[in-house]
Each structure stands twice: as structure tokens, then as C-alpha cells.
Length: 165
Ligand SMILES: CC(C)(COP(=O)(O)OP(=O)(O)OC[C@H]1O[C@@H](n2cnc3c(N)ncnc32)[C@H](O)[C@@H]1OP(=O)(O)O)[C@@H](O)C(=O)NCCC(=O)NCCS
Figure 1 (spheres, rainbow, N blue to C red):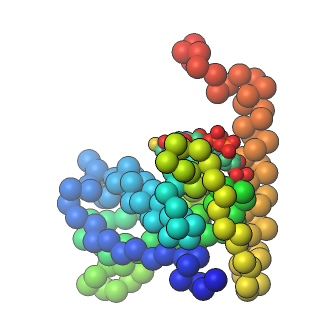
Figure 2: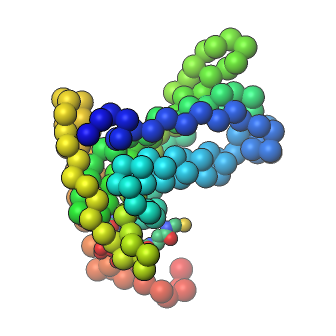
């Protein structure tokens, strides 16, 4: 398994249609691109259709400006039975000064599904470097925390269909 199969890089120019009322890039525009990157990274890795199951720890560390060239670096951190954690780091580059800033990071859980939307096996992640092992262990912990949090919500019926919020 090559690094290319586990990672994906996408670069997008931030155009005026992505702006918010303050003139910066809208968080929602970035989230849409992040979801596309996570989809492409996971689908390429497992060679299967995938859906987004969860998104957590989205950190908008710095704002992104219209006109900047933004690069999304995605990596498969962890693979369970059918789920894959995709970690994404985002850097924005000012095209005039070439100054690059780390702006955003997040973790997507993508699930490989069949044509009926049922989860299917994803290929085992082969850990080849020390860094990959570190990412894997950290992602494994996050998966456990997600599961515990889901179980607590279910016990408290916080995820029920009731519209009594
Ligand atoms: C994601 C989905 C396929 C999971 O269905 P499910 O019946 O829970 O499937 P399973 O029980 O087989 O679980 C599949 C995997 O998803 C993971 N998963 C399920 N719910 C999850 C959640 N809320 N957060 C994180 N992971 C989750 C499970 O841990 C499991 O991982 P594993 O196979 O690696 O152990 C289903 O909930 C779905 O189709 N959701 C809608 C997806 C969608 O429309 N996305 C676009 C959002 S706008």
C-alpha cells in the first residue's frame, strides 16, 4: 500500500462567491470542500462508495481570505471494519506574499457502503511508518470516545426522534 493510496491533496482558489458578510471565506464553504476531500480520500482508499457518518473536532484556527490558494491535506488515520477516520489539515497561501498559514483541521468518519447503503468491509490499513502508527493510535482513541459519547446519548435518549428540544 503506497502513501498515495492513503493520502489526498486538493488545492482550491478561494473565490468571491465563497465569502461571508465580513468578506472572509464562509465556514460553510470550507466545510463543503472538507467533506468533498474526505469523500475523495476515503473512496480512493477503499475503492468503494462512502458516506459521511460523523465530523468532529473542526478547528477554524485562523480565517481564510478570498483570493488565497487553499490546500487540503487528507490522510486515512484509522480503519475499522467499515469506517475510516480521515484527518484533514488546511493551509492557505497568499499568492502575492507566498506566506502560508495553517488555518483549519478536522476529523471525518467515512463509512464504506454497498448499493443499499449497508456498511461493507474497508481494506485493512497497513501501518508502515512511525508517524502512521501515532496517527492510528490517536484515531483509535477518538473512535472509542465517539462510541462512548454515542452510547451515553442513547442512554439519555438525546438522539431520539422527539422534537422536544
Ligand atoms: C453511516 C451509516 C452507514 C452507518 O450505519 P449503521 O447502521 O450505524 O452501520 P453499522 O452499525 O454497520 O456501522 C458502520 C460503521 O459506522 C460507524 N458509525 C456508525 N455511526 C457512527 C457515528 N455516529 N459516528 C461515528 N461512527 C459511526 C460504526 O462505528 C461502524 O464502524 P466500523 O464498521 O469501522 O466498526 C448510516 O448511519 C448512514 O447511512 N448515515 C447517513 C449518511 C449520510 O447520508 N451522510 C451524509 C450526511 S449529510
